[in-house]
Length: 277
Image (tube, rainbow, N blue to C red; front, side, top):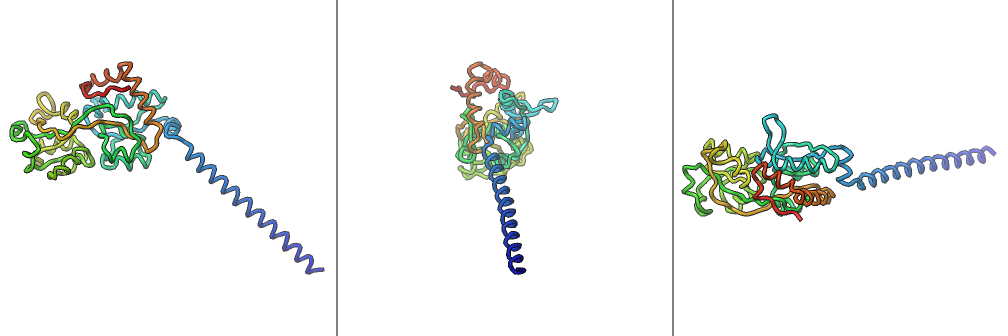
């Protein structure tokens, strides 16, 4: 009799423990699965709207992104980013990034897009979800004005030491030509290198050169000479982001209503704007 009672109690405990283990395990599994599904179902658009900000990765790059006298980020790209954010019902927030780490910043969600006169290179388009091109650009060589006559083509550049922004299209062009290059944090730093005489020349975007180099600018003793390529600007989002398609629609509407060109005229880049349709 005692053996029968012990056997029955043992069986009851086993069933009870199994049931508890099964419920806990299933519950945790369902919870984890639901949480993962919910996270994966959230689009980039949902993510940006839920937090109320579009975080824009930039560098100091006049006339696209730079600070005015009050410390506010302005420029053609900055103003367009603010307008796009407003169309989404959120605020634009600007974060200065190391240009060489732009892809990592995007993937780590410290920023939501790269909007800073970014050339649509193969590396960029393979790693990001990019908008359509919105501006034409080129990489140009910057030298002291009194030496400009010596440098009229790529063959004349072989003995020069260059400065260029790390990870930029300018650095890539110098690499293609096997020219000596010191990488710096920003294009503005490359200009400072030439002005200080620590580099013979720099390679920067033509739009920046037009705004910052030559008579009436902060670098009146510098000028641009050789053009190394032609290229186009785009905005980069995380891979497969639905924000890129939304921005393309915004570009079309802002070009059609004239606000895009008006903004470009404010910063003197209207000749570079690509028709959006």
